[in-house]
Image 1 (cartoon, rainbow, N blue to C red):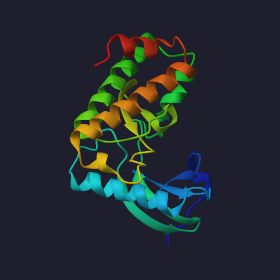
Image 2: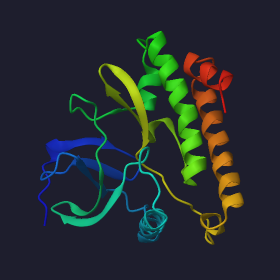
Image 3: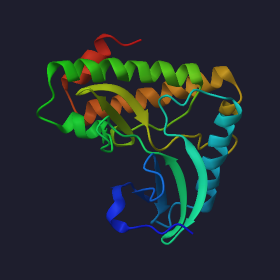
Length: 202
């Protein structure tokens, strides 16, 4: 059993709390704290990650799943911990979109990386329900260099045909992407990052 120090919690979603792994600073442990996240949902998520593993996808823009563990706070799922060059946990896209101190260079970088994220999802055929809070922006040499998805990867369809059909998968990914963009435009109307992204969209 892995003992979890609550002081190592760095984030909390709708259903899970996230802790830095006590034995490996490159990993985190997500622990369910909301019973509305059912075992079936957890199993569906894990099955999808195993499906991606079998397809040997690139994990460049997704926090990789490493299995489940028993902890002092209950069962947990182990994932890559996305950090900046200085070792700090990378901040979410919503953090940067809410920031009043984004530079012109940072706006351009995030816009470009968002379009690259869309390309990545389509090329790797990865289905995800995106939101600014489950995408993080990784910094290196004081620049934003990478976006990574840290949650809500998977297909919620009862019969997940999209997982195995390229055409249906791409259609589903584009649909989810358009929803993501629409939600961002509603939450951040006229934001420079989104204007730049749309003006250079692929």
